[in-house]
Length: 136
Image 1 (cartoon, rainbow, N blue to C red):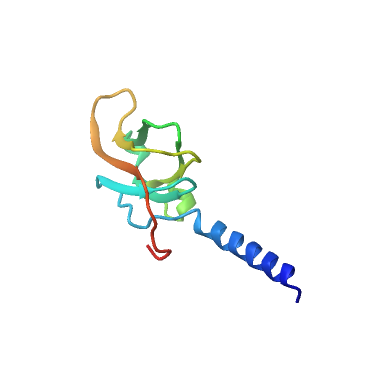
Image 2 (cartoon, rainbow, N blue to C red):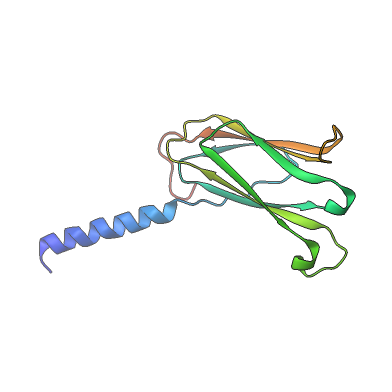
């Protein structure tokens, strides 16, 4: 194989592997617990929280940084295969390009239009800096 093709193959393989490193999934996120996480542009964080809309309590969030996108998808109990049980909320957080932090996302379980809060926790994000081994 010519030297130029070998170099091209190495560059393509390196780019593909670097692309695989983005889109992290933090399994350490524990709903209901205040936490601090080191993140970088492109990271994605997924977790699920229980919610019982029949009692009137639902999860809401506030975010103080436009580079942090939060979305919540509600899953009714019948979609989970258990009738009469609580539903859940699937949370997706995407850290956009250019993120420089720090920032905070606060989740609150409350009744709409009411000051009554059943639960509250905050995820605080800090920009990951410096070199880190690929396994960290």
